[in-house]
Amino acid sequence: MPETEYTLSELENIANKLRLHVVEMTYAARSGHPGGSLSAADMITALYFKFMKHDPQNPAWEDRDRFVLSKGHVAPILYAALAESGYFPVEDLLTLRSIGSKLQGHPVRGKVPGVEMSTGSLGQGLSMACGIALAGKMDGKDYKTICMLGDGELQEGQNWEAAMFARQAGLTNLIAIVDRNRLQITGDTEAAVGLEPLPEKWKAFGWNVIIIDGHNMRQNLEALDKAAAAKTRPTVIIMKTVKGKGVSFMENNAGFHGKACNDEEQQRAIAELQAVIQ
Amino acid sequence: MTGEKLAQRNYYGKALAELATENPNVVVMDADLAGSTKTSDFQKVCPERFVEVGIAESNMIGIAAGLAASGKTVFASTFGVFATGRCWEQIRLGVAYPKLNVKIVASHCGISVGEDGASHQALEDIAIMRSLPNMVVIAPADAYETYAATKALAAYNGPAYMRMGRADFPTILEPDVKFEIGKATVLREGADVTIVGCGQMVSSCLEAAESLASEGIEAEVINMSTIKPLDRETLIASVSKTGCCVTAEEHSIIGGLGSAVAEVLCESACVPLERVGTKDTFGESGKPADLMVKYGLTTEDIVVAAKLSISRK
Image 1 (cartoon, rainbow over the protein chains, first blue to last red):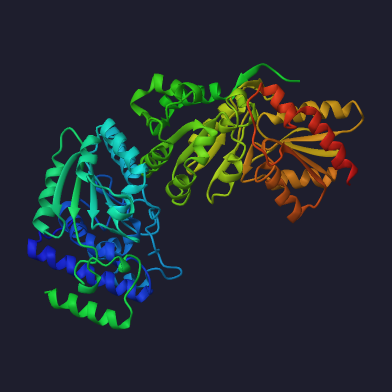
Image 2 (cartoon, chains in turn red, green):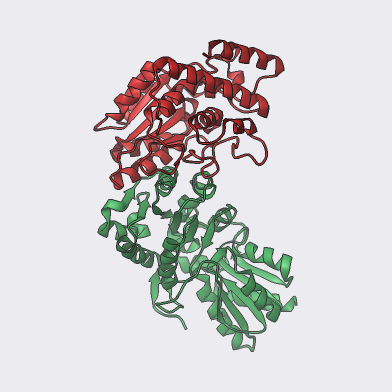
């Protein structure tokens, strides 16, 4: 379990360090998904460095909280958080996507310490998280299961099968987090197949809905605590975010959904992030 | 030679109900078809470890993966078409890739589903499940072997698919038959032709061997109840003796038992092979027996195939 109790500003600083890792990893791999990694960075930090009970020295600890990254393409931000938490050496991050590396393009259970489920094909993580949460209930455990979803990913119908099931099975120990950055590969989610009114959809499926600014660390932590206290329904946190957050030319730019920086962009990205890291 | 007619799914349900007390890790799931797949027999005795997901097979597989990742031994059941085709990619990513302990057990496989028609007749399930790395594929020959295979699957830690028919059909094995994953059994010895069957076609293979014997042809009959991993040794030993082979399955000849046997024969023991199965076609509604005739899945079809195979030696 994390031994340090980080302050808000320390957590914000960690989030930016993770962002720097994302940019460096994807640049080294010459591929990967920086945009959605950067939008999720603050919440991932809130989870791994404050909210979740977990032990990097004992990834199989029975009572740990479980995290499922349904938007598996943002593996870089997950790997960065796992490495900085101590699951594996930070130097390994630069092996992302290279042959023989445990850091596959999308997360693989059993290859990377701390990765709970294999994901990457969208729309499946919430079902898996339901299964983990259900096992927790069956076994009388009080761990939480947290599942992070992309917003475009919610176009996959299986999410709504899982949402119905979670309510039916009373999975109050399940927290879904939607990274609402409003961009998918082709652009605006609402121009592709619109998701709005998104909060009302989740409410109609029987979930508690919390809407936050996903780049506000205090709001992230408060939302997680509130979700953890749910007594009757599963909770979804819809976090409004900016795709590419933290690197000016990546922000709100769907072009960086699945593309790494070129040499010149890389210099700028590193300079911008280093300027805000303490 | 054939015994009482029994439905495989009834013996699946019986084995599950026993597993409820034998193995506290077993969780059973269904997608609104528990009464048909007989997972309801488990539900009756162990409702706390039975999971109804509604009509949502993809979600069922994802939940199964999550349960298995949390230490459960999961049996997830529905009809064959839905259990494999509807959620093949969920099985691929969630179950096969991370080698999770999920058993997908399907009823209503094959054309003998009958009146429901092609939408409900799984004739491609072996092919698509066999193509997945880490996946074991089993088609037991009768109700007794289904019971034994269910128990064997509960003891095996890894992904597996087992297919069952809908109808009652003849039992051919002993009620206490043993089942070992990956082990074929020679049910009848003969030197002229090897007949390899799986599922309810094994009973027809034995009848075909009887018929051939009356004409002086001695057929060796192998129950290949595990299609993956295929028991190469038993197959190769048999065809080395007989010099020709026939496969019989209630499944497409593309990708199923016939293809699996062909792969081994072409690589390791090249002998003439004839495949009895559906010939790249969908089924249709009708009485099971009439469909078996129309689609070339009878004892007589196996006899004809055996003679053809022998003639090609």
